[in-house]
Length: 139
Length: 393
Image 1: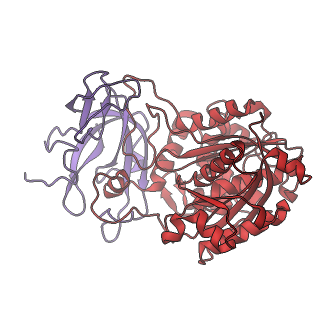
Image 2: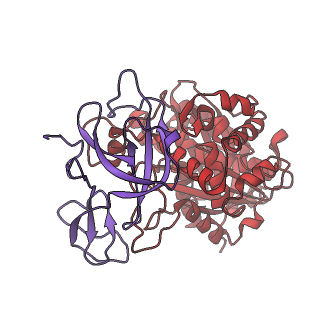
Image 3: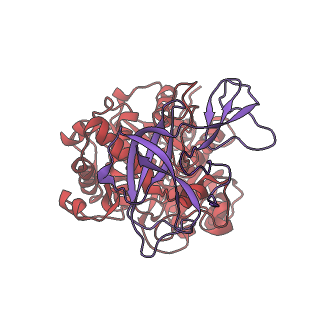
């Protein structure tokens, strides 16, 4: 598939087992999402002097920290359906990285089907302009 | 040496959707505050303005804009921009100037004219800007508040009826406030009948954007005594701390928290008042009244716990018992809060201090908290900005 990602370098384009792409500090081991970028990289942990990072695939499963939905059409740069169709939004806590990552929930899943604490997994789905993004789905 | 400054005067332009130039609201509020303080404009030595980013160049240089509109008289100026905490940062700049001995009396001022609907990110293709990124993938402002609200429901058993009760309480408070925009006593049914915005929050759970202006006249304690106002309320603390790594909660406009795999997570909201209490040398048990940033109804409950007015998870219990209503043990948002005002960004943190000033002077009329001696504010905005101000008799 020749999918165009909505953001370059934020996630892998593996249709079956996609991962968010993060950075891990080689000194203290903490994780970052999105990745640490720029010419001179450094760790934002104030007690770490690390300047080298590994690009890492973040856990593609986690626990649902909380959830909501967008009943009203968001402003640009969101590309809305016409008319707007509400979609669910999830905040998922990644176990290993101890980090909460937001994302919308795959089409067809509404808030009634979600529950705090349930297992979630990362998938790819096209936005309304055809560009691909990461989304969360009950595992 | 005392680290306190005196609040000599407070003034506001009523909140609304007036659609006029923001300078008008600011100047109105300043003139009310000057009169309230009994200070002549000519005697103000420092003008500290909260910037507005939606009103062109005059908004970016708000301190000078207000100074010119009031009539140039040679005062030094400053402009602070700190999102929702802009007013507090402008106040902190004025306090520092006074405590350093560089001036005796200062005007702090903030005003805004806001567009209708969602606040939008700057235009263009800007993948390096988290504010652009989150809108691109569909994460709007109410999303964040809704996530916190749903989390409370899962963790503490709060209900949508509890959230509605915050609106009912605040609308009853604001009904008595001539500066409030919405002056109607809403019922729990009114909230339940309003449209869902971001589950579990409905339209009446979420605050609007408003036009408005607020101003304070502050001075050294010596100056206050000199003009016969030695008993004026004192600013005992201003906290404007930034978050500490690793952030516990995903905050607007970020898409993720820090990782707490290596360093324990910290709550930004709880750190704000913590520093204020330390600076003032008092504790939550000393507080008689609080003005907190109820961007959503549920957020007021979070703030009560962050201010340590009760244990984690206990806020709804206090609310249900009427303890946070005027007349209760620890009234929260006697002004009516953002529920009744809507948000006028650079003015809002100052409006909180105006309300506490009137409360401590016993001038709050029907919404007066009897015997109020210590008041605290709590406020938070985008990009790691927030504030907590303590004012006492």
